[in-house]
Image (cartoon, rainbow over all chains, first blue to last red; front, side, top):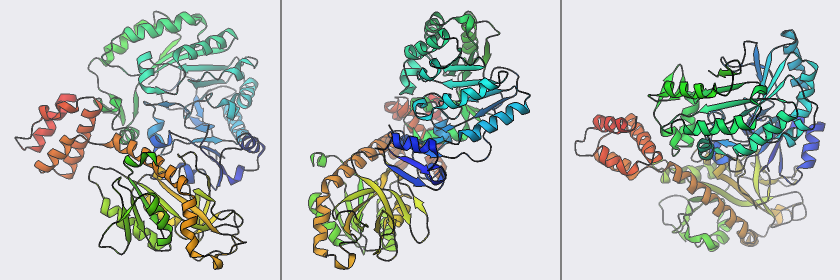
Length: 328
Length: 274
């Protein structure tokens, strides 16, 4: 599962780490001072490391709950994100993480209690409310059997019913949720792209059918679920792939009960894009014409806005305008 | 060695001629006549082996020398492997591992070569300035790895820089009693592991270079038209994009070389795909 496990000396003797190390006793274990010594080194190649990623067990220092980027999220409440993990087990070619980190290794911050304290503090600062996103720098559920993220973080939000937790994922690892009493202020948001896009760019990701099946089970169990059509990568394919995707999704799920549905175009900071181009000069997606607006790279497309309007129109034939939002 | 016919763009650095002996034989290397201070070997599969001499300065100099010789305009890289003997508190003579942590004792700094290769034992390596006789840590003690890693990583990517150490001395068999004639035998026992390493590293480096390889059109333009550094970078990216878009065959059609005007050529190429 992991090529190596690196462990910060500071967390080596913690119970959470000892359990993990016992469980993965066959994986080579290397002690390091700080995770950055392994993770942030220069001369690393994200693409090559994706062939055989390592796990780094570390302690998160500094701020643990951060303001969500502008336009990220579905309502006007103050919104935040927190990352108990950096990097993702999947290998989506469009993902900005490829340009954000020099290493593809997974960093798991094991000081959950510190995150808990920081979350509680932030929630109380917001009078018990606020929206809290998990899954910005990682996939929150994909490594659940290792991280036990749900086991630790769901009870926090159970204590604060007016604070909302969104778990963003492409994973079908939902057993932890199905085995737990529903947390009414927790939303499981699953990302989808069209089947062609998934085939071309989403490596190691469960199929659309399996993800949908997982969402269906969650919905039946009473969990709030949401759909994220991100990133929309618009090309010459027209509307047919979206018609097919939307029909597949909205016929499987109870649309009335969907917490929210969003869309978001393919965008990333210029610097990330530059780094990804160096990693993947042979990738068709990054060879397409682009344009830069306010430091963000977007695909250049003459009919982007009309295409997006058509997609939104189609979406709104399934869901209400109250359920839908466009991610900036 | 089934894959000996495949390209092996790997540089092997050893400190001592005795460490080279078994490798030269197993890898069918031939003495390479070069006007340098280093003993050099190579074969037709692009494997190179250099005997650096002992210690950090010597190994760094050998890496620099070889990298400068191999500097490539098209951005191709090579893998780097340091093979050598080391001491350990109690590991059996002849046992060996790939370094997953290299600590330079004089500076206290550690490096962590990313581990992509399966099927080879791994462990810690400590680089010392003088031979170690008490082996305080459970690590392979030797004299080159930290400098080798730091220097070679400048010319490649860290995943393709590895050190492999074969135990030649321990507390029961102290360094003062090493029979140097046995060194080739100790290395020889680990030839299967070394071959696994070379083959795996070759596959990875080939994959990397293949993804970065530029269409021949790029080299043709560079040889026929005078380009500024910036224009070369622009042309490189345009050629990469044509290749990624499956339009490589159209490059020469879109912008022929007759006019010899770099700006016009670049404009024509961009117009077709932007």
